[in-house]
Image (cartoon, rainbow, N blue to C red; front, side, top):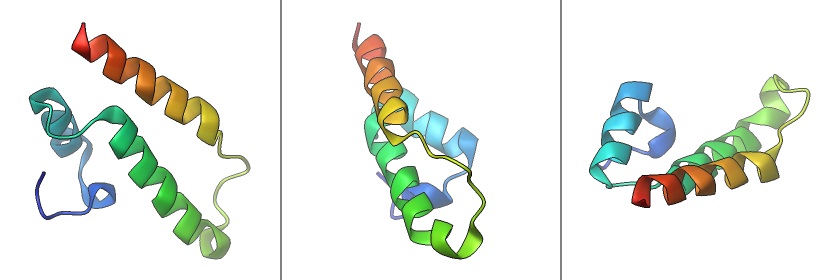
Length: 67
């Protein structure tokens, strides 16, 4: 992994790290959810964040990548 915090990555950079196996979908999703948690009280930009579903989908993506 690079020294850049995952939430600062562009989509192409995150995709490249995912393809190389340097990060997992779960790791990326968790980092983005943490960023949402940190900023949402000030931004109030989300009506609802489906954390559980996002993490389930990330885990499924990681499992599919292994196969």
